[in-house]
Length: 461
Length: 179
Image 1 (tube, chains in turn purple, blue):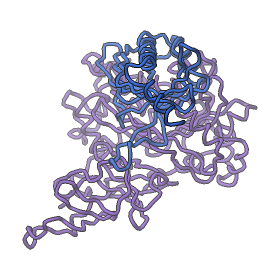
Image 2 (spheres, helix red, strand yellow):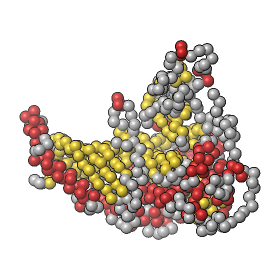
Image 3 (tube, one colour):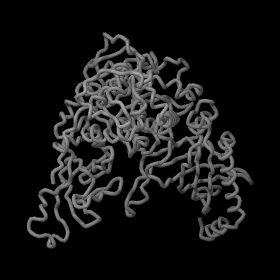
Image 4 (cartoon, rainbow over the protein chains, first blue to last red):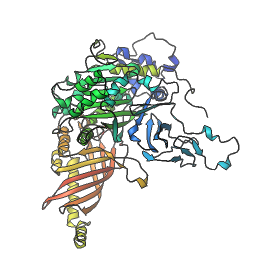
């Protein structure tokens, strides 16, 4: 560990007012991803947390939900983008929309259940009424407004600045100057095709599990691209024979870093055991890979049993093959994860199960049972992860701890892989902190990029 | 069931009846096993065909029901319950190593005749406090619907357990304790 206070570094000062921390130092000094140095301060400092709200959650593409969650006209689900409540809905014309869940009059939340099916939204406070397309249909007591006091055309629900949909996954951004979702995802789409398009379409199963953990959101995020922890953090499952006893078992794969901080791993399954190939999907479905994917993608799907990917910043897939208990047969599960920050040290976790639309009832049931038993807050794998996130957060608060950085140097000097079939920078090992460093590099890039003030964020009226 | 038989069953289930007292003591003894970390003994209380489930609850208007959805925090059978207990018995189940200290409070018991002649439904309210390490309390409350099957003259086994939590967002580190 290196003491960050003992070092003085010449850095460009153009962004200094943007990154100068009240507690001393600048962001670019305390987070140096290219050296594998990440200060503990970024996990607990309220000032950094406040900056993240504007610089990340105020303008990044954020995941809202999957189209299959709102199949019918008028279906609405309430979600969060950081601290902002949002409505995820299908309007009466069938168009998917995302609005701030807040009346334009006094700011009251309009939809106050987790989901509903509506023809309109009537605010319970003063009765302002909106259509599902967002227009303000009526403000009650309109005869009490004089000419020029109420411009209804300007008072519709606040939509996200841009809305995007890739393979049914709906994202929004509050930044009207953001690149398109397709541009932002870039080559990540090539890998998303493998996960979300391998057999055609996927759908989300039921509702998400939601729970709140006393941890910094970034510790959870960091964990979802960390294969290195599996043997130790999930040691109980090794002892039960549900994971291999070789400490390197999860290392025999590849990791990939892409533009814009998107990162992922693919780990092959046990050779010769079909259950651990083909992403854990029943073998009868494997011919669908060739139909839906290009040959290089299909080859990856056929030969791997595990994949984790992060669509920067906080949305992840976990495609893994496991048994749900000591007697059960292993099966593939597709778990989607989202971390929503509540405070610097508290995070709301979302966990979904997704399944191939073409899944047989048997595969669907086994995948569901396996998911519930292994992932989510009650899952025998997942529950130990939260222990780490909370303890890492608790130990990052004090003045002594904050003088020291975390260690993200594994693989700093590792050569890239030459014969990987997909796009991006690929490394021939799934133990290493290359993906975390790529994630923090994007974090630093966004945190040191000036905000446009209120411009471009629809702050007018 | 004839109306006479059903009336008799109702009387047998009433508070103060021998059956009611027997069920109450069974539930108290079960809570005692959990609160003293005697998981292997606790596991013995379940039938091999147990379904142990905690559905995810969502926030809904009254007219749309209680909000329990087609997703669960727990959906266990006997094998997965055994796996949970075996896991807790390793020295590396970090979420419970060192263990939580729990207190299972069981109350508001109502007993009704179950579907089979030898089955009774025990509906209770529960409150579980959990504290771990030097941390404050995490609280779990809800309703439990247990199907108790009488296997011998003086003993029950739990053949079904539905844990209906009050929270839609679980404000706890995880669900590594048993309910």
